Length: 239
Ligand code: URA
Image (cartoon, rainbow, N blue to C red; front, side, top):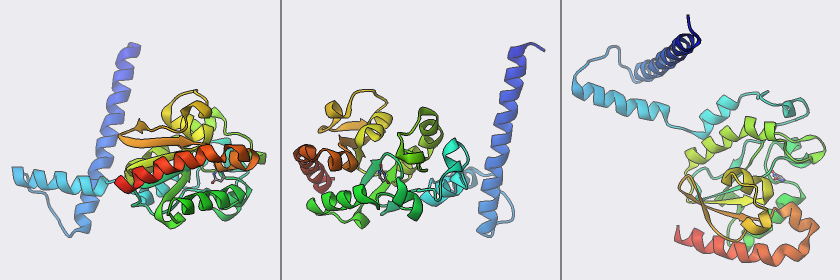
């Protein structure tokens, strides 16, 4: 058998196995609704389609379940908790940071350390409480000694953040710092050049700004963030 036929057979087998899994989801869902058989009229097929979309709708719970006790990258070895995200899953605004630090790893919650306290104050300054927004990170496990996330760690983790954003479908994303902005916008442009204006990420308006931990080390940059937050507030009120 040539390699291309073998590759074709393997991809057909994968497709069939996906269809079988999808059918199982369909039928379990219908069984849960009390149905015991399938009628094949056009109307029934339309109904099936409708149920399927409901059954397959992306939810944060489903994404968290798929993440499981993740071991997709080396960070699982040193973590105490996976930091999935927190806040209002129906918010118009999602804030995306870099990754958990010591406190976040200990508590399993994003932005609860020193940088988190500053973020809470920044949010208050534009009239928002943490509970009004959803907060998450590019990576979900703490890198040892709070080092920067490595490319393989981002690659392993980013599909979950992308799914979270698709599930929440916020109007606005605020990318906090280099890693959040560069990863979501798929660019190497420095945060100092990215910040302060809106970009479009999967149909969502995305505003990069400096990370609160960077502000703690560089308080002279606070006016820049204040300027960015006023733009964010204006967009939030209009959204
Ligand atoms: N820094 C981040 O980028 N995320 C957190 O959750 C905490 C600190």
